Image (cartoon, rainbow, N blue to C red):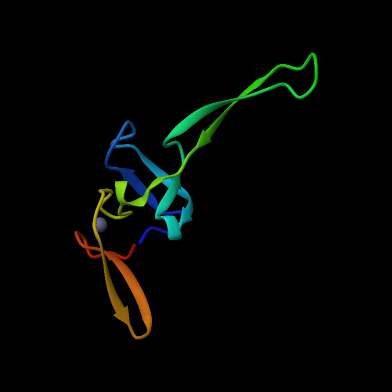
Amino acid sequence: MIKKNDTVQIMVGKDLGKQGKVLSVDSPNNRVVVQGVNVFKKHQRPKKQGEKGEVVSVSRSINASNVMLVCNSCGKPVRAGYRYDGDAKIRYCKKCKSLL
Ligand SMILES: [Zn+2]
């Protein structure tokens, strides 16, 4: 499960191999917005006459199954494992066993 502020790596598409921070998560739709990934330039029309139009970069959401969590300890895209410590669900790196 990917959470906000996680670092993820993109596994498919034009942003393949890029890493970025998760800015928001849309769990019901299984989509995530990753900083600097799937960026589109949006032309904003001038609001008033005489003003210049602006180009703004907007990150669009991508399917969460196209990203993998990056482990802070080993720095690689990894599968997360889960275990219970009492009632708390703990997420850990399956490679190096450190907590994610
Ligand atoms: Zn690790």
